[in-house]
Length: 68
Image (cartoon, rainbow, N blue to C red; front, side):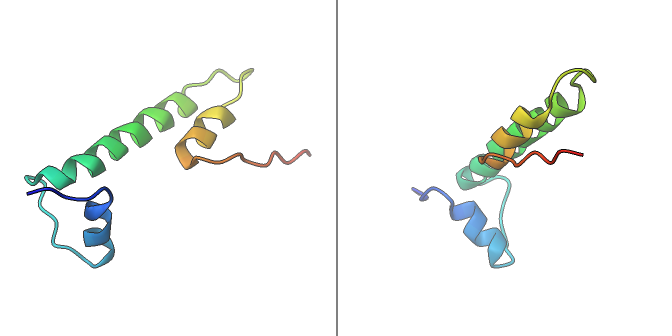
């Protein structure tokens, strides 16, 4: 069966059920891996470097920097 992009998220929003064995679940798995990879990179940035670029990629938007 052919599933449209985002179908797995529609199921999740509705409270499921979603099956990890179905083809539509691969989209969620890919997104979870992307998020885990970007979080890992952000957490492992040296103190003199910026982790903001990884967070911007994770959230798909520019983040506002606050100056103290």
